Image (cartoon, rainbow, N blue to C red; front, side, top):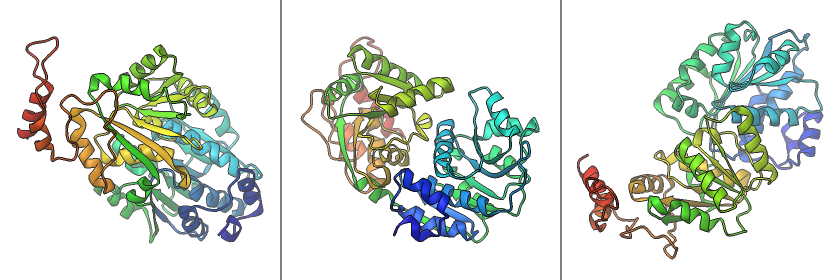
Length: 420
């Protein structure tokens, strides 16, 4: 099947061809006809499946087919809500590409930057708004955005919006829209509160479920290094001496950790920039732009900041810290397996992260292959495939280096696990 088989108008087909889109991905193949038919949609899809085009292409076409009215200040015809600034800007970039041969107006409404440019865009009238909840609520309160004409609503990455505490803001925004509208809802996971929202927002939706976790990770070459926390940076520095790692997205658990890793990489002459919530929007966009263009080889990111990072043929994802939510692991490594491409995912696992490792392996239904012959093996050589309690029991005690009052890692780990 090609995009020509999906009844897409010539203006969009021309844009897709210019952007080198040839064959629709499974989610695009299923979602585009349903949305064009005016149906509500529930999309369950992991990152890298092509879901942005799955909703953006039919929205552009539906708006083009509606009777045109003069652009009125603040009036919005379609609203796309996303959890992060990076994701909103990425979607904005994509929609501008898909609609380049139309006269539709699109604008991103995000926090972290001055709202003056966003005000100017709204004053001209915007057919499509891509927004994060906080800035959108601010502009609604200032009466600069009018949502009563919205005919198509998209909630993208709804589970992430729940994780970030935006659900109440989302509900408040929805009350500003007409009840009769088309709603497209996308979420990688379905926790109870998200399932409840689906039932209240969608009317007889078409459900599109694409790329189960197992198939997402199957096309990605995964490996695991058991390494002490103190040696993770050394292990990363050593790995990045390999010039075949053309570009690497490195995930850390904290903002401070991202900054620290970036500074340490600079000391060994590896070009790297950090991206996280404490950075200004301009700094984040600069880091992302440098990474995409190849000026920066390594981008060090926290999970929230990495939402919306869409880089063609990203060669490697490296988990400096394993996430404590197993689904997050799949989101992370999916950055290097975009739209069916293969990729490489490398994970470091310290002693305290072994429970996270087990949860991840349970979710993906396989053991991550372990690299045992490396320079910085975990002290005590934990058998990663044992039960957590067993693993803790076989670890050899480690002498405290500085503070005699501090418990050795192995002792702390064993007691903390058995006391739960």
